[in-house]
Image (cartoon, rainbow, N blue to C red):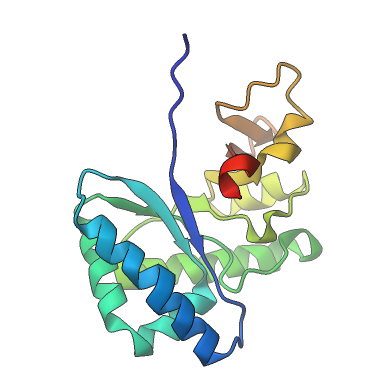
Length: 183
C-alpha cells in the first residue's frame, strides 16, 4: 500500500479595500483564534498563506498576529507560502507584472518573518500552462492547483502525489488540492 503524505495549508485573504468591519470579524473569528490554537500544539506543522493585502491591513492593527506568527515560523511549525501581493488573477497579466507581484510579497515576508518563500498560493485557483515558465523564472518552486484541473492531465487518476508543470528547464511542482476537503 502506498503512503499518502497530507499537507495542511491554509489560505487567508480579504480583498483589497474590503470593509474594516469584515476584516475585523474574520480576524477575530478565524485568523487569530487559529494561530492561538495551533500554538498549543508545536508538533502540528502546516503551511500558511496570507495575502499581501491582508497582511498590510493587519500590520498596523494587529501586531500580536505578527508576533505569534513569527514565533511559529521560528520554531519551524509553519511554512509561509508566498504569492502575488494583491492576489491578481495571474493569467491575464504580463510576465513582468506577475514577477513584480511575487517579488513584492516575497520581500514583505522576508522583511517581517525572515523567511524565504519558494511556494506560491495560486490566486483564485486560476491556471494557464504559460504560468509555469513565469513562476519558475520568479523563483517559485511549488504551487497548489485544484485537483479538477490536475485530474484532466493524469491518466491513472492518482492525485495523491505531486506533478511537474512546465518544461524540462522551467517548471514548478504542483500539489493537487482536494475539492472534497476544501469544501
